[in-house]
Length: 264
Image (tube, rainbow, N blue to C red; front, top):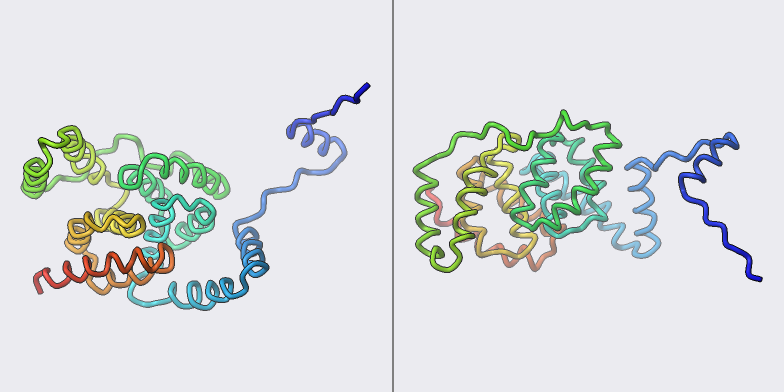
């Protein structure tokens, strides 16, 4: 006769540990996790660990033309756009430490559902949930579902909508309608992420996913919202390390054209 295998649920194990006077171990802190990750990298690729410490963290993040908060925003946007969940927890914590508010991080996730897809945003939700729990961030600190929206520039939006409708109204009228009603008359007007930051998020996501055709409009919009040419240039430099040189080199001619055509 075969012996039955006893399966003990995790919750029961915790109860047993408590009964024996042993407290369940707390989850490792973000700092501990990152130290472990670096040890893991060194055990596989000492060169990669060296470049991470000396070039990426020791140099790129310290370059002067882009504040740490901006660097955190574009890094988080790139990770979500590429669905790279392994790095999200660490960089979500870094973003919060660098001055990105919980409400802003929440809005970045929401914004990228539209620009990188629902699945990527949902994957980020799972990671952010644990980060928020670790830092005791409550729902009261997050944006409401339907806030009072920022004022709309009616003339500018009318011009944009007319151009898109002329180009694509007969191709996909539903897309054209949702672009106007949901993106530009709703999402972009949500108040918990400044227009400049939304533009940084969008441009970073487009570069990260190789969507160069959309970059001119959104890079111009970013610069109209206060991003300087030096800062836009530094976004490209920073993202080379997070999305790869090919994606950035694909974006360089587009950025060059935008820079040259803008009024001096």
